[in-house]
Length: 213
Image (cartoon, rainbow, N blue to C red; front, side, top):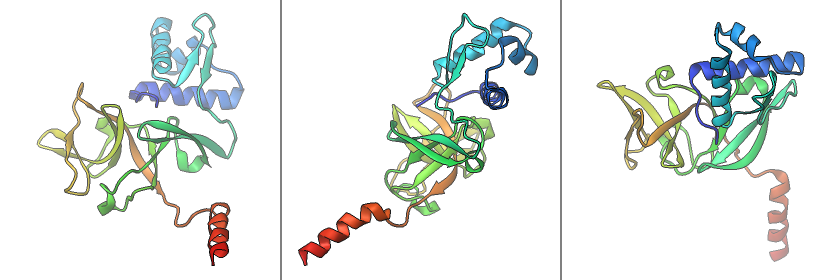
């Protein structure tokens, strides 16, 4: 999945998305610089290259507007959100744009019941938004990457240290430190739970049960 963004990188990405929706083409490097009061076009280019390196855009450095946003759906009502399970991408979900919020939102399938005490269960679909550690509040549910695998924890600041805990005592806590094994990916904003299988999937099972009687 794409790498987390800094605050300014996220603002630049949101600007690229909004500009494209309004104009059907991308802003120039000079326009981006004016928008964020960045004097050097080289610095703007470095920010764009960082977005490309982190998997959010593709760019052609030889062109002033040579940026292509990855995974962007410009439909006015819905947006495509990538869905992950154990860091493997399962595909995209079409969700109402009002639910998704800003650029970079993603969804994760919850594995296990380590967060059951706060109402998150195995198989739930978690909608998350990018976030930096200094934007988190005590008790926030977050998605982190631990040695290549995704995990869901709760964030607490204790004794000056960022502690990530599952709600169940059966699972160990972890520390969120710069350069450590645990990397913050985003903050969970919604939980989507299907209470029963879709009708199309349930019909074959019902037919099989009827044939066996």
